[in-house]
Image (cartoon, rainbow, N blue to C red; front, side, top):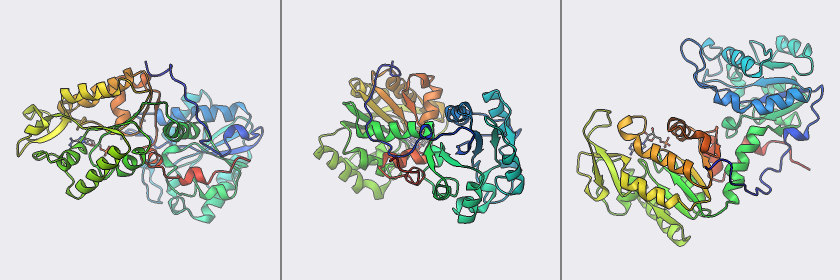
Length: 408
Ligand code: AMP
């Protein structure tokens, strides 16, 4: 299976300090985590995977004898205190996961927080209240960043999901403290940058999701690096339209048709093999119990829309990834939230998991699909960041990474 059999030589991917470069004993370390987890109306966390993915960094800091100060955002409280977005439930869950007391304070700056930090002992863990209760966080306000930095001796960024944002707790704070990457941040960069720039070939990219416009940057950047590109999901129909197909009422972005043509030309010039679906599951309505048909893409009638790739496309895509040594997948193959249009996405999830390759899945929907297909354990790496992982795949420099202290 994909997980354990492939090793990749990743060179020079992160020329920044990492947590292992810091001497943490007795020091106060401010760890920016991404605890932006789903919480229901009874304040129960319904998926704690983001908390779990930062545990290696937190446990390492505890073991090294640091005083561990954790901070995160949760939701969009827009600079005001809103109990709905309190991190208190995260403190409770973290306490259980660490099997250790987690001190929780109802603010993230100010004298009360300073006093609590002053009383901390080596190995203690403190969680601050939601950073976004202060308007200075998202504005990257200098005074707010300074106030955060005054709590600690070191800054460690492990919040990959927020690394594409320039906020006080992701970039502002780095002006005042030696700043290093945590284990999660490092791993995300190793896979999404290191593997992508030094892949074992054949290297295959599978892209899906609603729109071409959302994935253009990724397509353009990967076009120069991969051996094959597979496009499914809603975005495929703009490409099919560009090739002269009539696609009924399927999702098409008319203003992207020329760009789709240009991308196909670039792929051809770069000798990249390009795969589009050959058949689709179509319906007149995007509803679970609406009538559906499976048709070749030449036969999508007016009034009907393609909402999933069909079985022949699953076969084609599965064949195309069979000899892959590296696969990156971002975006579902259909409207998989509705069972009737989920088969294509789940079949591709299984095909990716079965491939004898290093497999990387980009956050959000695709992560969810891989879990629902029950194959997440067979994927080499699942990114925790939606927007941040897309920006890294576009080849952009993320401010939360660029602002960390350079390694000498
Ligand atoms: P994205 O955020 O761009 O990755 O898009 C994910 C969304 O694309 C999901 O909510 C899917 O329901 C939607 N999607 C995938 N395939 C199709 C399709 N053929 N028609 C309409 N929406 C689709």
